[in-house]
Image 1 (cartoon, rainbow, N blue to C red):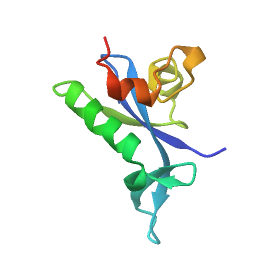
Image 2: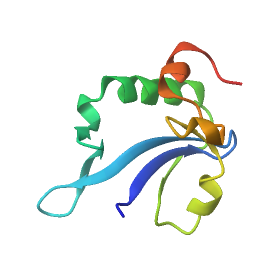
Image 3: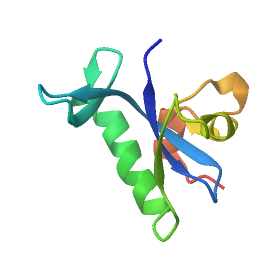
Image 4: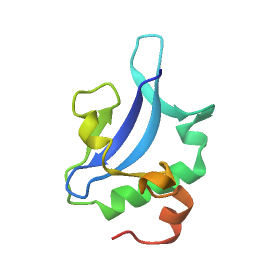
Length: 100
């Protein structure tokens, strides 16, 4: 199973999945991908990221990986782009409407 990264706002109990880490030859992270789409090519996820940053400005934001100990807590937060049946928010809806 691959390890995914999530941008998390703990105060709002909200997360945005960034995707799997992409590393260069030296092992440094240079980006993320969801499926076969690299983050910089995913217009919808990029728009969601900028909206997330704007809506959570002034809040604490952290990047949490799915293999971190604290991820069990983060997994209970609402995820932008997550499973609708789990109460998460489809990216399309997130981009159209403000969240409460």
